[in-house]
Image (cartoon, rainbow, N blue to C red):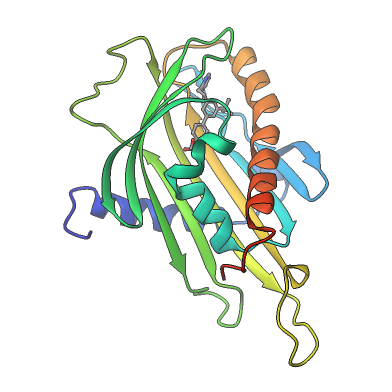
Length: 240
Ligand SMILES: CC(C)(C)c1cc(CCc2ccccn2)cc(-c2ccc(S(=O)(=O)CCO)cc2)c1
């Protein structure tokens, strides 16, 4: 709800992340390196460090047939499905349901050897945006996750190292119009997904270890998540 203390930040970060996600990868001069490809999925990263810590921004573009942007964002945002597709998750707590489109999460993730265990607190917001640049272009569904603090869970107070992240999942649905008068089926739709993330691993971890971990984990994560949405939706009516 717009009276919540986080609302101004949510508005600012959502618009900033949507603009960032819609930017192309530019020419090679922008430092984006393609590091994983699998079918329609292309994953890029930029090597960046903050205070000697690896915070490599990641941008992935994927095109998946048979699902819509609304469906992809629905399964990414809704807490009740998260254990099904987020295999690095050990514990998820909804600290606050700020509105029906905004939640505050605490997550502890399974330890990924040799890094120590991590946790994260973030707000998550789902939004449907008209395509403001291209009037008859496909509309946008997006989920933005952005780490924040919570007075009851101070960082690094328990066994976990606190990570900080900003994640934007931006989706655009494409419909190939079927023959005049015939209903749209899942064979006529596809979803272009842009996934942007910056994860600051918090406590120190060797750059080589983190980069190897990111290189291995991110491609698996996006494929697993999109396969999950395909399976969950295949026998259900299309959510436009
Ligand atoms: C390795 C990598 C794939 C980057 C990774 C490792 C860890 C585990 C914690 C961690 C971080 C760094 C080093 C070791 N362990 C967490 C995440 C992560 C957490 C949350 C989200 S989310 O978009 O908010 C979806 C809801 O869960 C995305 C990614 C990613």
